[in-house]
Length: 582
Image 1 (cartoon, rainbow, N blue to C red):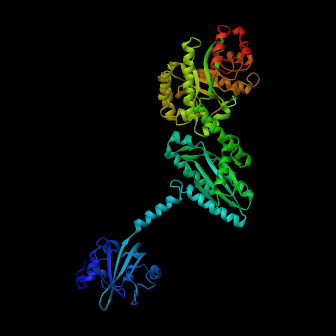
Image 2 (image 1 turned 180 degrees about the vertical axis):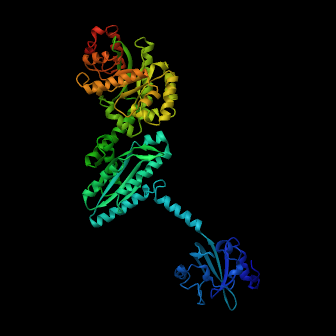
Image 3 (image 1 turned 135 degrees about the vertical axis):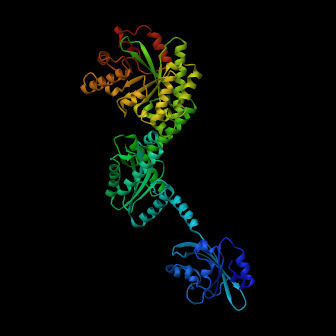
């Protein structure tokens, strides 16, 4: 403390001695500084000697004097005007000015000392810049998405709630756009989350160029956004989604990589589709899933029928869970044949669902729903175990000894424990590893390339075959086909259906057979239904096939009976006759 403090009375010394860590300023009723502690040099840049005898107004920004005056009983910190009156203490957040002219927010606690014949004031203040920055950061996190700068879900719903009140009072219209990015997960899986984050930032930048200042954009999940469009013109409400879709057509360049994403957008309108935030967001979400289920759409306007369908889908999902718990699924098996001698060369396991009314529900009717509700991994484990059990039974009883193919989704194949799960199931069911074949589609091969490659190598090292299903319908490449070391390609039935007459299909199949020969990969043609198809395929070097011409999918008991009854009967001369007993 400065030595001139000793001339002050005892109460002043006592007040000054306590808050040593903060700046302490003692001044009289005219605002003249009598003493300070040494902490003032840290906060304000002045030494105590420089301030003693000067007006306290030198510590206050000139453009903040009015604010200070208002905070401090509307008395000014300048000149020789009376400084304070009829006051015990003040707590306030004010602006301070340093010696170099820079300003900072500070907290001030001001107390009047009761002395004889004069008024003395003690101000205790400290810099709250860091506290302000922390508060601003918390406010930012509470309002905005940390990555993209969009509103977060909570804030966007608040904005929607307020917008609905405004619309009710002004009869304006409003659209809720539920936006889900397509193909984004593949970017994350193949290139990592850092690249994925950069794509999200660029997506938002493009969206902002389309949206108007009156619109709001929020990120509500990993690759999900909601846009709120305010307009009295319904054409505007439905035109903006198309422009958002178009904004994603050009590829994103990240680390010199051209990356492509698209979007599925569901649209709900106020007041047609709901009058609350929950109703409108739910309606837009339902419409978005309609887009997902129809590959030819990019955006879709909600209708009441969709909600009915969504409720039915939810009920079906509940029944699916019950079916899993109560073992209501069953497997049917379709044989694959050597086209040269018509002997069985493999099996494919196909799941069916027997509902409460004993109706057989095909996978196309329930697997997309199972995917939506996260049931695929559990269903996959069930299929793997049952298929391995049944094939082990066929082999043990000398009925059939061929590999059994099981279709695996991207979510299951990209599970880090997938290979361990498969080998454990084979061990538990006593199925030789060489008698299991894992089938994946081209789209699965596009996910997390490093992990997919790692799993394909591990499967091959364990003696498990890997087949690419529905080849020619997805997004693959020859290098990926080579690197993943597939044992078998299955030509999609869409190329076989009109093979005898369609020259384009013939050229495609020829090309696939040529690629397979070059890579030493077996080929199975799916969907064979005529003898002409068999002859054409066999002449062009396709060795294997499956389809209704040979045998329809059958449950295990029926398959066993079929194999026993047709043992030795399936020859080139009887080709096609065996199907009559199905």
